[in-house]
Image (cartoon, rainbow over all chains, first blue to last red; front, side, top):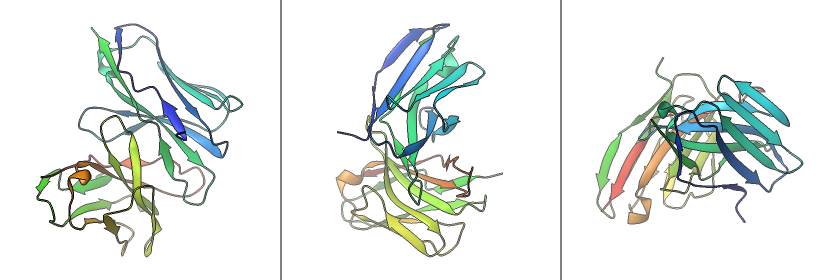
Length: 112
Length: 114
């Protein structure tokens, strides 16, 4: 079993739709949770970062963490064609080097 | 503000050749990482460093070597390139202090081994 599971998609939605992206994890040592967005032929860029259970909102984006279920989500409201990218969840454990463990990424296309 | 800079961006290697991917950061970050990304596989950690002179293996270190002689630079060496090393390579860095969990990535290096 992978430490972090993420549905690879691809996911295609019409402009304006609400998008839900999800990851599950198996190791309770993960304490920090991030979402990265990666455009084609670019490096990942940090979108959202949280370390506690609950919701964190930033504009059209909401990150949700449920540590009891080991489940994290990213919601995108009013999705735009510019949101078309691959979204990667990334988790950090409380280990010494705080390595990131990535999900495999979900490829999202928002159709105009 | 350059951030994390990787060179080269694209390279084609023949089987058995060697090369070095360069990575430098100007943010005075302690932690640096090399990841490889294969289609549909997410990012896998090759090597990481928690400071100058200190390196350690990640998940997929075989066929690679690193060094960290300065805080700024973290080159990745490929010895005896193999087709399995065809991938996109990302260098990343992080400050390392409490609250400094944001990892910054370079633009990537596309490597093809033929």
